[in-house]
Image (cartoon, rainbow, N blue to C red; front, side, top):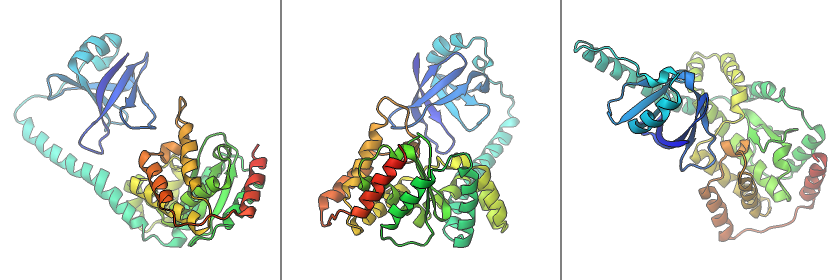
Amino acid sequence: MELKATFFDGTVREGRPVTIELLSESIKIQTIGIEYTSPLYWQVNQIKQLRHHKPQCVMLQHTVTTKLYLELSKDDFTTQVAPYYRNYSLIHPVKEKSGSALKPILVFVSIVLAFFACLYFFIVPWAAEQFATVVPKETEVEIGDNLFKSTIAEYTVNDSATKLINAFFRQMKRPQDYDIRITVVKNAQVNAFAMPGGNIVVFDGILNKMDAYPQLAALLGHEFSHVQHRHTTRSIFRSLGNYLFITAILGDVGGVAGIIGEHANSLKDLGYSRSLEHEADEEGFKLLVQNNIDPQGMLQLFEKLEEETKGQEVPEFLSSHPVTQSRKDFAHDEIGKGGYTVKENTTMKTLFEQLKNQIK
């Protein structure tokens, strides 16, 4: 059975609408109205009910990740949730201490908590991201190399495909502040991701979806732009801001690299803000035009990746680089403006065909 609820993740004041499905030992939470989001699963034994200031509503808190809350109607909770999980403690609200003398203390604690919440969720991540823009290039490369070593160990590298894709990318003229190193790994997932300082990892699963070299050029141009404009570094610092900001201020570069290495598994799925994704699309499109590569490749890539979501689990690449309508509109509008010349690059075409043969 599915019920409607409101989900609060602690990052913004307003909640977002979700549906919840009652399972035997967990509650499945699915966002409404936002494409390509994976559901959350809360174990029932890790949920508690809190007292709520709205008498018509019930508030549930995740006891492991305590900043996560669900708000649903009291009627739905009473008639559906409580009977379904009658043997679990979540049907009983957590009791609060009473007494007027406690109220000033609670107000003071709330103000302090609000201050630290603002500091934790907004000020420090923002400051950490700004700090990432002035990190020395040598430090960024060191961080990226450590991250690459921690990440690549879990994959099987396709050496032949790696040589071909690097030769392919070298055909593209571009401004370059970093030594770009592209690695192809054997993995059926539709994914590719960039790291600080020049490393780009491409799964052969995403290469299998392509049928023309402009599509690969569009993908590499996009990922290259993330590296060139430090998008990955800025996003990593923002994601791990509370750790990295303090460590970086202390001047412990090794500590920064160590923290990032500890989070290597999650960083391969790191998402970018809309502004950074848009900038990478803009720069990637410019690279196609500057190299006389058909920019239709970008739109074709978006369409092929979007097809992967029909009736299937969202691919890893789309969970971190969602193909929104605005991104497709951007590519379509830029193509419609014209003013570019397309010339077939026989070397890139040959390298692409050889690459496709190597990943079969």
